[in-house]
Image 1: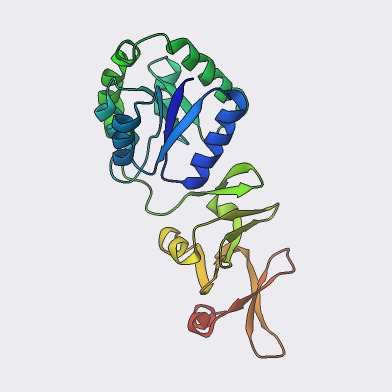
Image 2: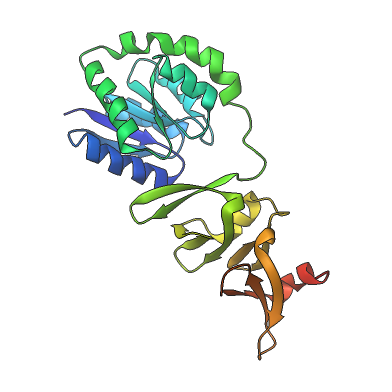
Length: 253
């Protein structure tokens, strides 16, 4: 039975990739998961998987750096969301790759390629990786944008990549954070306090310890019979409570 590990700093993405691989390649045994490149390197040494699915951008060692360290110990499959220049290189056959979010049709192509490689030594397959890594390392290692540009959120068993400008507001409870757009509601596990540090403060205002709102989605502010300030959202019936500590945001309104 072929074996693999998955390395991605987003748990939802690991879950999604595991599920999709189970659909298109049920014989593949996912024997480990890693949250960063360093953990991936350790798992490869410990578990010796046939395949290693590496997210290109991870904290600590990136997927590219981890691939260099792993070398010929495992067949490398890169996971990428938006690195178009890397995808072009992968399409030329240097290595295999999976696009985020993983779609069954495209994932099936990757799986078919991987199956043909089971009979080949990783040293032979990965011979071209070193040259490609040296060409792309500088671009891949470029800093991430200062603020989040999109959110990975789950809707049932599916994972959505949501541009932040499409999000009306975030609202947390004890376990999850609701991501509300005009068309649907999704869920993430990241709390509002973490999102507030990663989102552009000019675009998203924190109005409550459990609520972030897109400034462009604000229709106005009203008061209820208890004197609480409530934010009205364009085109929606929700009223989002404003904590006293955040009332200063609306003094100019």
